Amino acid sequence: MYAAEPPPRPIETFVFMDLEATGLPPSRPKIAEVCLFAVTRHALENPQFSQSFPKPVPLFPRLVDKLCVCVNPDKPFTPIASSITGLTNEVFDRNKKQSFNIHVLHMITAFFNRQHPPICLVAHNGCSYDFPLLKAELDTLGFPALDEIYCADTIKAMKALDNENNQLHQFIYQPNPFGSKKKYGLRDLYFKFYKVYPLNSHSAEEDVITLISIFQQRARELLCWMDSNARPFNTMKAMYKETESYTSFSRTPENIQPVHPSYLQRQPRRRVATSCSLFPVEVEPAGIESSPPNNSSSDMPDEIKNMLLFSLGLLIITWIAFRSPEYS
Ligand code: DCM
Ligand code: MG
Image (cartoon, rainbow, N blue to C red; front, side, top):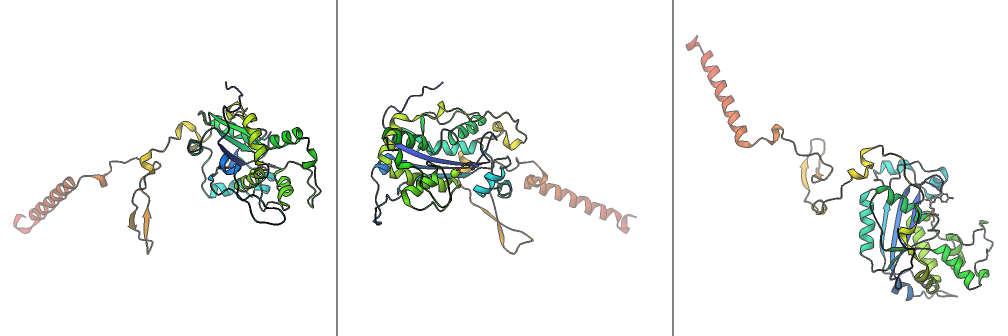
């Protein structure tokens, strides 16, 4: 059990996250895209500004670590999720994308290990969607992850700040051509600050960019709020507990072995000419998915092969000699 304590000292790295998935609860969604952008406190506290008129706007931080991964959800998208994200099960299958397996866990863990602690995972509506969903997927893998990582929800933070400052009017709904009534939606907040809508929504990467741009507009207040209100990620409750039994070998976590470092060192490619191609084709070095070596005759040592050929030759000569007229 984890104590829901805030970080012991000011947060040094903010990892902005967005997930795309197959739908909304209670459909027990599965992740289809995960995107993480790590930005330091220093970069958020010391932005560069554009020379734009009438008001200079903060420029997007220049120094950002980024990780975006497509994940085959192995579950049908709801029609609305598919339509807003532009993602389909077919596109994941055709592109042979892997599911949320231990390699994704390794990538995420390695990404966090490179950041300066304390680290806070930040997502818009994170407490209601992204954090519980990520927790559910990590729990399904059955490995402990994201210990000592904090998390904070920008919708909660902005609402709390508006209440504290008694500045609710600041985010009161402004009529817009699309008639949205959400005051704290990502698109509405972006419009509030930048007077245009973000070009793309519902792609994990574009939503993270939009979130950081909004965050920059209230960075000082938000940083301060998160220092006292961020909570350990592992105190989050998973959105659901995966009860479905794994149906295929590839999805069974025990069967997904970490990649041995030697496989990560790129081997020189062998060039092989094939009969059906005018050009040599490149053959990948044997990897973890290649079949184990077998001891078929093609692997027989040359000396034995030569001896067998020699014996066969002798046998043929003797047989011909005995069939000649001299012996008949
Ligand atoms: N989502 C949905 N229906 C909506 C909004 C969102 O099914 N009306 C699901 C699919 C999205 C995921 O939530 O991939 C995350 O939403 P967002 O793109 O806003 O981050
Ligand atoms: Mg999104």
